Image (cartoon, rainbow, N blue to C red):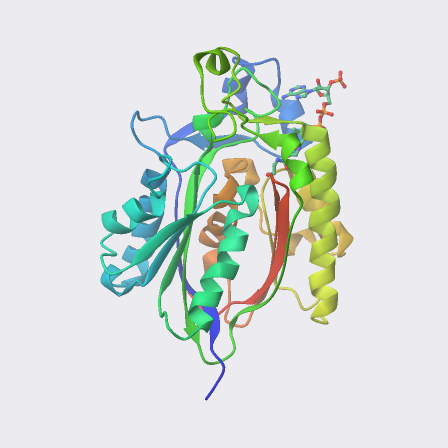
Amino acid sequence: MSKITAAITAVGGYVPEYVLTNQILETLVETNDEWITTRTGIKERRILKEDGKGTSYLAINAAKDLLNKSGVDPKEIDLVIVATATPDMKAAATASYTATEIGAINAFAFDLEAACSSFLFGMSVAARYIESGKYKKVLLIGADKNSSMINYKDRATCIIFGDGAGAALFEPNLEGFGLQDELLRSDGNGREFLQATYGGSSYPITPEAIAEGKHYIFQEGKMVFKNAVFNMADITEKILVRNNITNDDIAWLVPHQANKRIIDATASRIDLDESKVMMNIERYGNTTSATLPLLLFDYEKQLKKGDKLIFAAFGGGFTWGSIYLTWAYNS
Ligand code: UT7
């Protein structure tokens, strides 16, 4: 019997309507379009404004887009994973609510949190379920409502992050397409440089913490940047060497969208032409768990069966990694 590989067979995406431009940010903090564009590559981001709508709203819309396009019956889905750093609520999994709302009534569901590497690590988890032979349809959604933890008076973070969601369906493949190899890493020493300190179990939320803005996300941008550049480039190079892949073989680099300079550094390390680098940071900013699937959503029509894709991500925690996947279908 042929070996089962885990292939992506459909993608979907969703971003909210409201566009937060660099020009609007100029009215909120001391910054300017030129600084943001040259330092990050970002021009605008999408923000979910409506009260009472959380990450599940984004995830549900991305999943519905995938289901509508592919015609997949949600009742056939075995597992729904929501990769997110901004779950709707504590304790109740965002994935469970999402699964129910999209009609995946026969699925089990859970959230997966690894900051900006959540979707990448989720790809590994989704693949293991499929490769086991026991599960036939795993829906992996990367979704984040980053605006829920942003202080729009902090120019170190508010210029970077946006809201959005992307979804990918994993199914068994008997032709060898799909996830081929992965290198995943973490280093807990990095958590001091990027975190929302209050609101978790170490430091439950208090009126004092709120007054001081300690429930918002904070980052030491330079430290995160330095580590992201080194580790994302390094692990991407390692996965190429391990699989004997040259830059000529690569159809697309699919890099986490945190800062265009981090993406450029990764591409330059493996000497990859920018025409092979997926990029949408200009329009969405850093959507955390949603960047990778939103790239697939935006570039789906350009992907061909057999294309070699190299995914790479770096995020808070620290967490990072690279995945080598071959594309399984023509649109
Ligand atoms: O997804 C994973 C998580 N996040 C990341 O990967 C983000 C990684 N970090 C970054 O992308 C960058 O560090 C930032 C975009 C956050 C900051 O860029 P930078 O080139 O590292 O700037 P910096 O913090 O070193 O600041 C340089 C200068 C400073 O002024 P002085 O001290 O040189 O006079 C800052 O005060 O730029 C100033 N600055 C700004 N100026 C205008 C910092 N933020 C801004 C701003 N607008 N928004």
